[in-house]
Image 1 (cartoon, rainbow, N blue to C red):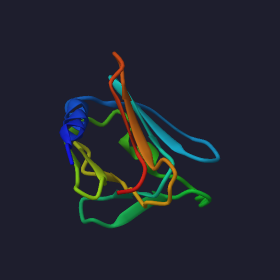
Image 2: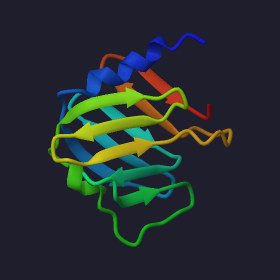
Image 3: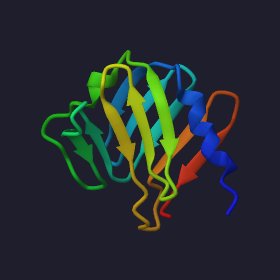
Length: 122
């Protein structure tokens, strides 16, 4: 399978998270150059790989901590063979958005200028 689109996530490196919001079906992170909407499972981990926040369709957190990446810059971005997006921030936190193969969109990136990718499953 051609996975050239995987390089799109590299365009987040060096950019800050400017906004974060949650609605009934998704969590969205706005960057200086793009938007990341996550409708599937995700986790936010601290520098010791301890989960400090998470989400999934139909799961409601009592208190979100994902706002802790606001004003943080992406220092590394990868998309695994299983279509898991991993963003590492300069604040020491790591965001992982998973593809769970349930037939629905799990996460999507849309960049200013029109480039985009939507992931649903593996």
